[in-house]
Length: 171
Image 1 (cartoon, rainbow, N blue to C red):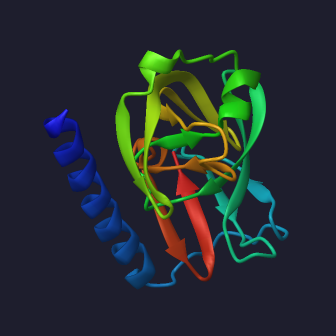
Image 2 (cartoon, rainbow, N blue to C red):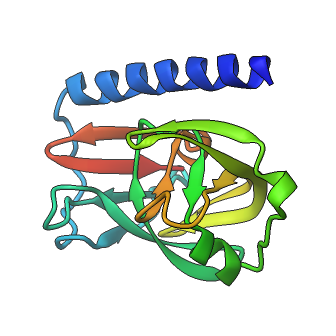
Image 3 (cartoon, one colour):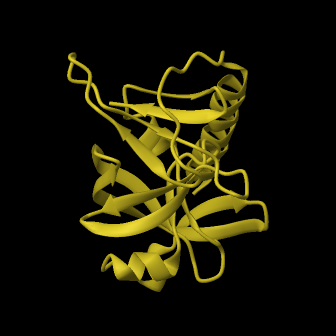
């Protein structure tokens, strides 16, 4: 149990460094803008890479629609989250029903420490950028207001960067 807590602490620290790096990266994007709170798919380049550009929503966050194991879910992109975090309600929509004993991962949130259930998602598709076998956590009821798309997805892309006031994802 102690090693899980130490690992979680290290992941939080690493996520903070990545978030800081993203905030300080130069604004060099030449991708077209998406409409507010929507994802714009950019045609694949000749190199076979695909990228999408995400604009901030009305709250100032980067919100995306994803397909998780074929089902549509809404997410807030969170570079401070080491894994994908699912609400209990959306986990049930995916057919994930963790037992009480499976809530064994300690997670520090803004509202304190809670136990979450580790799971693996078969595929996560954001605008055609598909990542397979993605670690995630199912959060207990009312511990999370919305699903979080964390670094377990983002770091499996070729790149992700904050540029020109937009978030660019590339595979």
